[in-house]
Amino acid sequence: MRARSRRRGSLRPFRSRGFTLMEMIAVIVLLGIVIAIVGGNVMGSFDKSKYQAGTIAAKKLGDQVAQYAMSAGRAPATLQDLLKRDGLGPFAREADLKDPYGHAFGYRSPGQDGRDFEVVFLGKDGKPGGDGMNQDHGHWQ
Image (cartoon, rainbow, N blue to C red; front, side, top):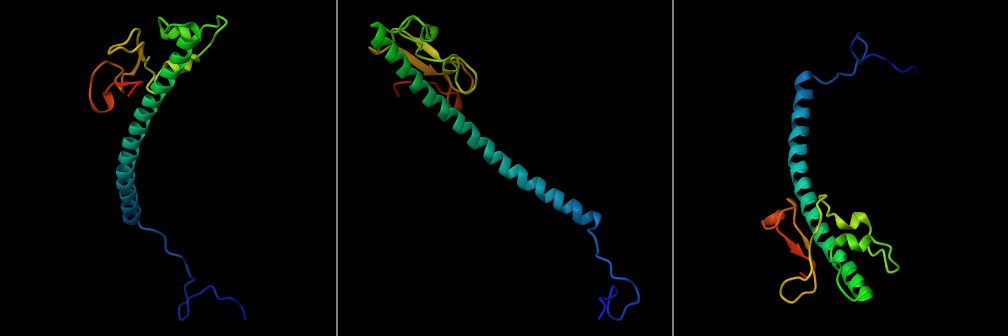
């Protein structure tokens, strides 16, 4: 038997029907809505993750300052001292001195409340103070 290219009872050849313009527009609109909803949630999660990475980086940099202090007998005057190759170091890389947002970490030696030093992640805005994603976070917290 030969395969038929016509519908049963019809003299016209069988053609597959395509999508109409309205169906295509409806699909595009629905995809846009889904992408907007999912994209907003993903960007919020991305900001939270970046903030958490900044708090972890501040703790890591605080540990590097503590290693310097143990080797040199004092905390460094600036974070740039961690980069020096003076027989003891280097204790950090240039990239370690910037937070995930590209801002320099805050540093103070001596610190407040009896601390020898303080490394502070200044949040998303890179400025002291703030709340939410702009809130400061010290290495000791």
